[in-house]
Image (cartoon, rainbow, N blue to C red; front, side, top):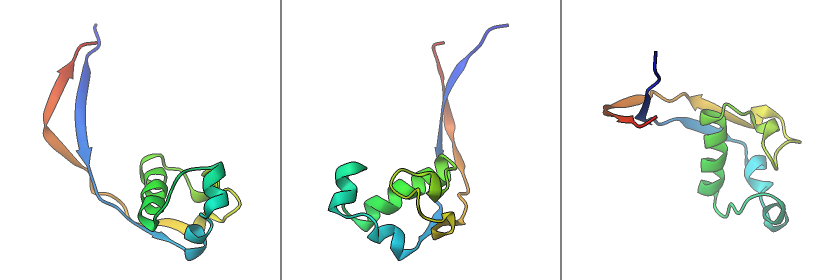
Length: 91
């Protein structure tokens, strides 16, 4: 029996909540060591990706390992939508 590869697109929207301490931790010194996150939206996107997609709690993220997980949480989990266009890929 062979194997097949498919490209499937998903889209979803989640709501996260960040304590101000999480945002305030990102300053110039923090950016020089970790990531170039310059706005609160950059920070929210980065943390949201890790929380929702990677299933990674705050305390396991680079730059926030000393903070309690409760300072960044998912308020509304994504309702994933699968597009009807699915493409078969070469294996």
